[in-house]
Length: 482
Image (tube, rainbow, N blue to C red; front, top):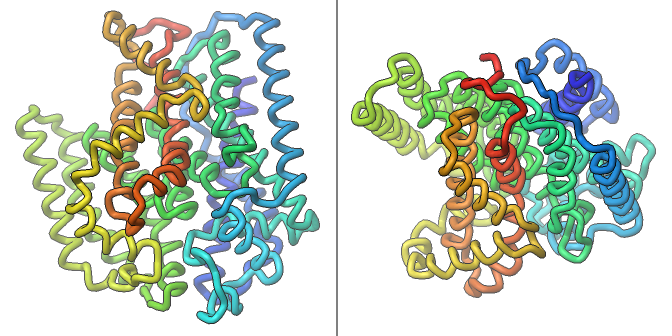
């Protein structure tokens, strides 16, 4: 019975990947995206999910959730879902980025699903951040052109929310979290204030942070459960969803690499390269530059080879800590050297008119702004622990960390280690935009962006909470097959 919802979740995730791959390919060819792309992606994604099912989780779960708890949880999810649907239909985008970037580009694509139009190509036409990734605008436009209109197309947001819950719930099931625990953990995650509060953005606000959250959560769930397909799919979606996805891909690759998980490292690398090849040439074109796909593939592959070779050595020989650090250092050094030598091929990404160029030019600013790092970390901690933003997840993780240190149980140690490393690196990465940003008023930048950047890592935090939760069975090893 559990395989049916798991298959639906996997099919929906792969549908997004297939849609993005097809649509971005047409845009790179200078062609209009066919209206049939979304139905075709749904069919192909379903077939791929059937042909490549998730690794089986041999978890015996004898627990039975209380009917009262299940009923209350379902009622809360139904009420929240209905509110999100009403909110999606009732208003257009309710945030600055949602109105001026994501929805405006969606409306342009709904009128003509191609980049070859004045909105994207004419420098005399104002387009706020029109070089941002276009997956969400294309999804909205695709639904609108299928007959839903732009108002009806906003049903996408509650559907992505449901898919996010499915990804987390299925990952918890495969990690061995008992039904009784999942019955109240899932509503607690779903009702996180940042997701459902209409005054703070929320699922139906129109920004792409929900899609970025879904992508990163899918990749993290795949990494924790050794699911190469979900990992590659999540990383691809992360890169083509928001500019921060490139950093997310690097963080995921770092965790898989340092953990010596070669298959997962290959999945992250493949997904990251595919996403970069799908988006970066479009980005360069939108900022008035050019980036040839063959050169881009060669550069990315050359940079990835030392990482993959060193990762294979770690997985094959499992050296002692000192030698392990040496292998990692050599691999990182060769990768950075290759990236430096091939940097001229990426000159188009440094165009000052684009978001990547602005941040790449900010490396010098970061040196001067390091003195602000304590304040930035203080703001980060304040946002993370504030119940009005993220509920009690920070305090729950702290309590679970204390409890796990007092426990002698080793079950799930690998999953906890991977997810904890991912979350720590992710939170460290949240500080980077504030260090390199040209925004002179740091306090204003924090108030306008910190909560949304932290939102990307919410799914990882809840996956970690599930991994730390008492399991439904007590074998020494995880029930997931390789």
